[in-house]
Image (tube, rainbow, N blue to C red; front, side, top):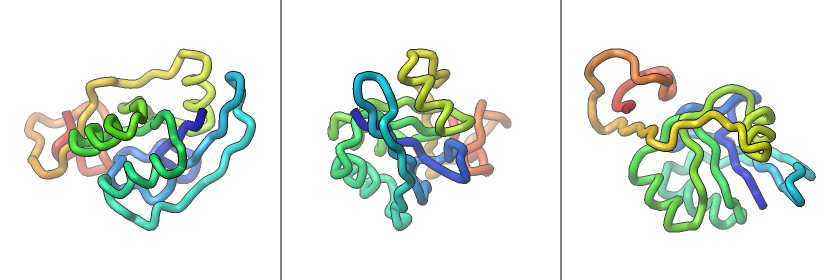
Amino acid sequence: MKIAITYDNGQIFQHFGRTEKFKIYDVDNGEIKESFVVDTDGQGHGALAEFLRQKGVDALICGGIGGGARELLSQAGIKIYGGASGSCDEAANALLRGTLVYNPDVQCSHHEEHHGGECGHSCHGDKHGCR
């Protein structure tokens, strides 16, 4: 099994479509065997889904994620754990223990403006379109 986490300086990056790096964890028999950081070259959400598929990723942990990216990842057979925050390493271990705190309904659409203040997490600090 492979887990990918949107990555920024050890923390879960809060906007999937703008992530520049993933930390990928190779898991065998419920244990992390190795982990490494890969650069995405700033590809955007459509290319990122294909990037993860090509890397053989089975699960994605991220902060905010839009509907288009969700659809592409789902089509690629990648399970999504959105709305997560904190340390990447802690999140990977929590997923394996079944204790990861995430929001299966989190969405970020930066093509629409969000009205009403806080959305529950910070999408790259701008809070536009978070639901």
